[in-house]
Image 1: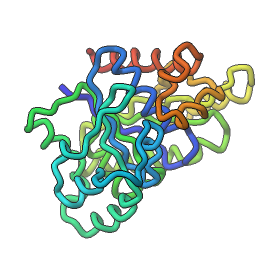
Image 2: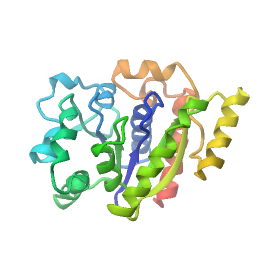
Image 3: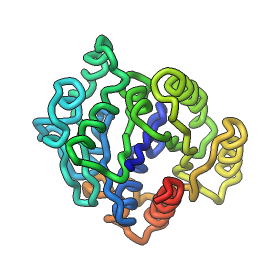
Length: 257
């Protein structure tokens, strides 16, 4: 059985893409097969895993709006996970899909088609765009669970309520089995009372689980995308890499693998 997680937060700058790339690489280290899907028109995940979006002829945009077979678009990355890359063309997908019947189901249908063709993964991680538009709703409709990366600062959690409202609507109308797996604290500085307080407040305010351990703030994360690899490759023994490995193990345990 495939476990599909939407990694979502409409606020940018919360290490969402870093988390997708790093958790994906850590899951591969755990012996899992992984597909990463870049749903952000900025194509940050695609770039950070060593592909230049401008050099790609085909992307997830063509799969979702043109009916191209996803197997023709998927690439294997140096870190191990397969990737369904994005390009700037994905920005048009929102408009293209708005008038389409069943638009909420396009990602679920894509994944079902892959499975029917014999391409089955243990994990699919959906890197959602920093908005609550059509693509995010489609990702939530396709997902088993939602992981919410959250920077441990006061203002960063103001949008969590909006995201949870969207999750509630998706659960009501298009995906009854969707669950929120929890908040993933990022850029965490445990030395500050402020960061610890924000973490406690999130858990209490929204009654959400906290996915352990918090991801520490480190310059190593900024260096990894420039190398086209995740931090698990560029700085294997760093505290950030160790934290993402622990997160991946905890997710595997939760999925019952």
